[in-house]
Length: 121
Ligand SMILES: [Zn+2]
Image 1: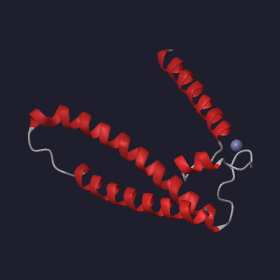
Image 2: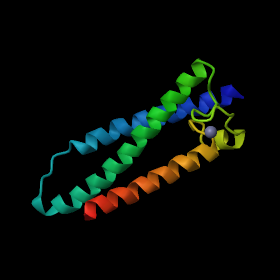
Image 3: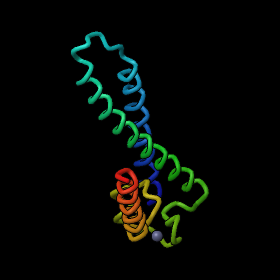
Image 4: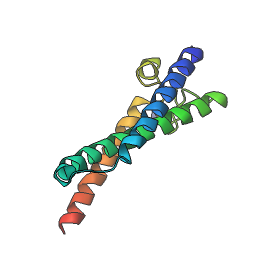
């Protein structure tokens, strides 16, 4: 069982590492024409936000592999309950069980709201 997840994690890690290596080349590509700048800027912004997400995923994958090594893989980091196999099949690098993940997402959304309010003030 764990072997399957390890394989999935290792191939995901490989995929992300390759993807991120390619993207770095794109990011340093010089801008030749001024007319392209606006479009390129928004493309770059988009690329960066995706890059950011890929980095986060890569870190999560690496953390999951580390947990596999110390035998804590599949245990929620927050409540220490087992993460359901269904969830691990979908996201082998998931650090939290579904109910903790939902709580974290909720908290994050609340944070965003607070930030929006402080921006307005
Ligand atoms: Zn949990």
